[in-house]
Length: 375
Image (cartoon, rainbow, N blue to C red):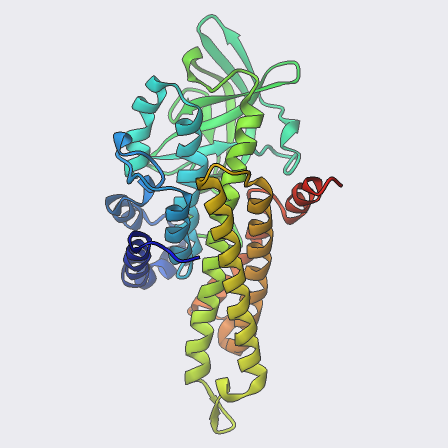
């Protein structure tokens, strides 16, 4: 797919930012498990958090294709930064834009779109995972307030100093799941300690506990009883973004491995001269290219208002699985150095696996694709 001049300019700008600003400092954040606030602030100033939102909320007036381009370029260097942007936009701000009232949009979107604040997406619960419909969190209407009790797990952007809200799903009646916005700092809303993670170590992920949390009835997002359906659509869109991120990681593995294969010498030659290495690199590049075509196609269908659900699932499935493969091959090409954290491919290897799990496991994607075939 040929990108427009505007998207090519965006790609170049984000690529330079990733290489010149993110790359020099992100390894330190990663190993110390610290959130890169200074990078996030600069991303906000660049308008990255506002890429798919209208100008009336401070956005850039773009779409999911623009967001995907930015995510791919960021993930070529680091996935922690990329997932911070992806979750903030696709999971945090987008549900408010898609389903919020005019008052809710005016209240919360400007800060989210500017990157001055982040929002979380509270769907997953302990013990349920892919069974998102098994929500146990409950919300009871008491006068003009919702009283919420329950727990959420693995929630990105939920505990930073600039997190402003988390939208949670809760049972609001028998077999009725709704979405409710819970502002940070609300009494009874407890953010648990950050997880000790294998990868994405410079991103923010926490469990959440809601103990008699009271929020205004007006914090209901969208229609009562439609929260689960709304979040499923949110995940469909988000899978395009995850596919773009996974493609970026796969391409980053190619970038680092080609450079290393040209420099590293063995038996008197650059290791890239050996067919065992050059064929690995050829396959890695082919995988990244096909993943890019898949997420471009899914994004184009979404932007055009066409049915995109199954294409998003295929893009996410393919991109996440080839990202894992490319990360493994990149580590092998680097040999012992690929196991050392000072090399980016070691970080890529640690970051890749979760792409087959988050925002719908590979098994869930196969279910979506199979059902579209009438199976």
